[in-house]
Length: 262
Ligand code: 5RP
Image (cartoon, rainbow, N blue to C red; front, side):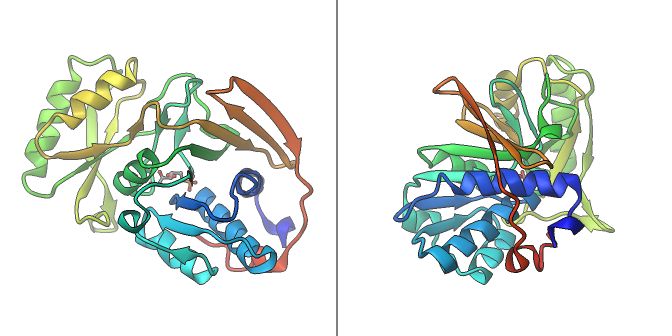
């Protein structure tokens, strides 16, 4: 079945598989959202089933919760867990300091709350997610529906004085209707092109009335695992200052690769 995967999907799988090595029995684990995180959830489900791994998972979206239950992971709420040993999630972009843009899947709010409540955050990604400067991927900002156009205007006006290249934004849609997050909010995608000072932008955005959270994850990620289609997995640890590369044996597994759509 793995022969049917695209190189990008293989890379995502490899990153997820390598990240699963960091998970030990007894851990409370934050489970990210998106296609890469879905691979991780499937890998952990297989370890629960075949290797007796005992973990409690805190999902970052209803989608992930559903998948986690389907593959046999015990799901608890963040408030039940209170604190997590580890969160593993995907990202839309990461830079050399492991600052991130997240929220392409619309789950940035729960993702940031869960990652912040964790001893360690590991990001799993394919190599295309690495950037010199954040911002080519439109920056998601979660806003409450009340007065969202006023909030949008305020954001665009504020962007004029920020170190960014563009200042247009668009309301994320789900077909003909606005996309609604798990918390009932909207997402504005900011087309800023390049963000000169991500920390400053994150702080300014979160001070605006109507903004719930933004997709800049600053100083939250500890480790990034970059997967490659040929089975290599590079592990960069920002705290230890180490970079290691392993070669994963790409074992074809009917169970894992079945129902892989996300
Ligand atoms: C969801 C996210 C995802 O982690 C991000 O969009 C990456 O997704 P994918 O692994 O599908 O490329 O932030 O809100």
